[in-house]
Length: 130
Image (tube, rainbow, N blue to C red; front, side, top):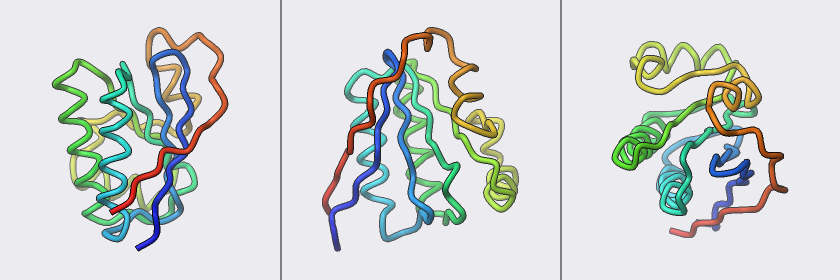
């Protein structure tokens, strides 16, 4: 399996991690590792940018739930940015909307967090190999 990369944009201690068009079992492990890596680097908040994502299966959801648990343990916040109807329905059915804040775009997700007034740094890739 090829190495998976996720773009990471930092704004202060808030990390915005960009997701691909499809999040499924083939990249779930790399996704989980990327999200946990950002949290391990001291992020006070994590925004999962799913604005380009059109599909997410249970393995992808599981990776995000695990990242949320790690974030809670370190008092960090997690937000998901997506306006894709299929994803919003999935997150609603699973009850994620009450556990992880859902926002229509990255700007709204960042606005919901305190301390994100610093200009973002250029994106950098966060790669993980199986």
